[in-house]
Length: 108
Image (cartoon, rainbow, N blue to C red; front, side, top):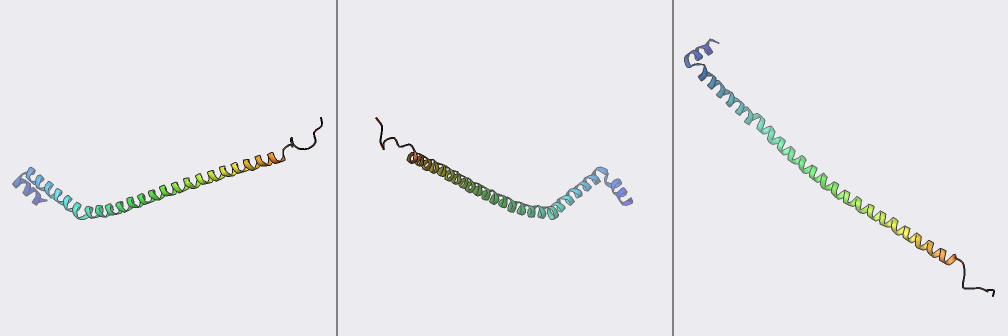
């Protein structure tokens, strides 16, 4: 502690504070470049891989949604075709089993 007091009395407090602040800045810069930056670079790689996976999943979902829409459209079209076929067959059966107006004896 006496050493710090001797340095302050010899150079003055502002100079000692500036040197201490400079050392603090150097220490933080060194810690950031040696410890934090490699971890951030690794996190960037992982983030890019995750973004790619999310994009692939999004594309898969879009394709699946399109396929589902096509299947639903085909199913609806098939149901409509069946309804039309049933209407036609029902219409033909009514025509063939309806009253016979033109044939047979008529009374005058």
